Image (cartoon, rainbow, N blue to C red; front, side):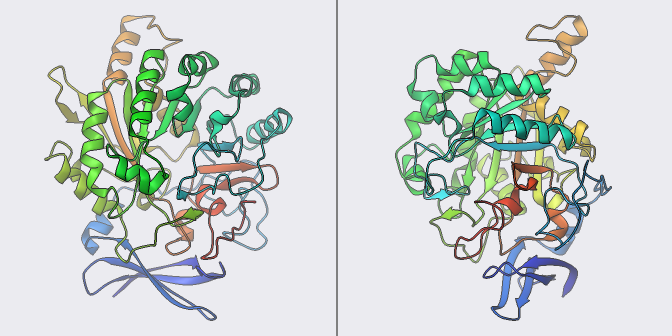
Length: 438
């Protein structure tokens, strides 16, 4: 039974083709599409019934916000990203890829880090990218990324330059190797102005790291967390979750994160997408939002329930999930009421403020590290005791839905293209060829 239509791309040639969403014989929701040259494709997009699929989008804040200085539409989505005039969001979080170098060679890497000739952006080029972002509606929340951004020794200068340009939130996307091995490095990053470290953390078993990262890394990850805690640098654990590899480990990751709260602010789950350098075959049964949430409930023995979670606000609800929990004095947790504004609002400024507060652990309105009034102290205590579990289901060439893509607010900044939605920038065909990534 057909339940909707959209546009997608052919996984072989990336040509834009019509797609339809259908209810399969098993009751799950699939995307079906056909390329005149390369044949038909069918991909699971929702492991659940039609009722749950429709209910997930209930109350969706489906307004349109035209990006600042939107670029003309010539070829159409996804070929004119930058952002183009057909895009429906103005941005929130922007990845600034500082280097393509890395100190790991992960079998799974959306950026294919280390495959190309080593290259670092110059400070001058970074300054131009900051200027571009301010012209396009900034200040956005900046994600210092790569490659592995800690391969550079000038992150303090990069952050200082960003602050001069008007940016205030700097998230470090890192594998944690340097944080673990270099004494005093976490303190250096904290003093430099890093707001939070998003730490690649795929589980509590080295077999998982050997499969996804090519090395035994558990002790490295634990030492990185310890060093960040000593430095007062907040951490969010970011597992890439692959079926049959570590989808059984979500409960252990969440319980471990809670045991390290409030320093560990939460867990941001990323079901694997099959683009970039990916040494794993795409399975017939992919990890979809309801499947991940069912695993969370089962593996935490009901500590976190499916009903605690809701879809995104600014982005398409089928791109993400989110829940916030209040940590009680007896170490139990209570799910906070689900509100669309918690997941990010249609307005980019509201989304940026929410992300900044939730991950940095600093209440809006509190200046610096100290609360200046009893109200500030109350708000700060509330934020510090809030634990967040979220996830982002990135799209690849098999399940790309251009309706979802047009609402993306997580972008990559590129000097040639401008602001490109993450899933478009990293999109590759079955041969690894990309539309945007060089």
